[in-house]
Length: 90
Image (cartoon, rainbow, N blue to C red):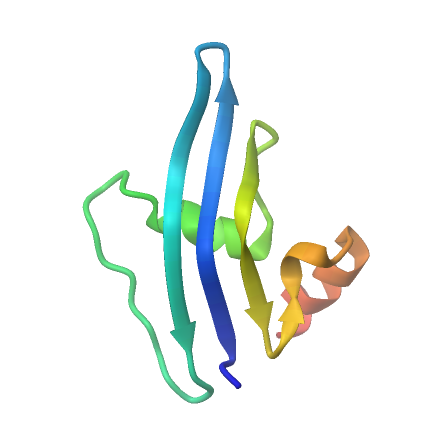
């Protein structure tokens, strides 16, 4: 089982002009004991991908679809109290 498994993550901003897809279909898996580096141009969505995983998004943003599993637990299904425990400890 991977430590972190992100599948088809899509994060969007709702603006006055419509919906802006900032993260569009990101997938990766990190086995325990391994490291992953995200590399890309400025503004390509690296930080927003990390904020999406932690669910620390600005109010105008939301995860539109995808799955995020940390040690087999579905982070997208957790409430805020559960996420706070994960963020501080894992």
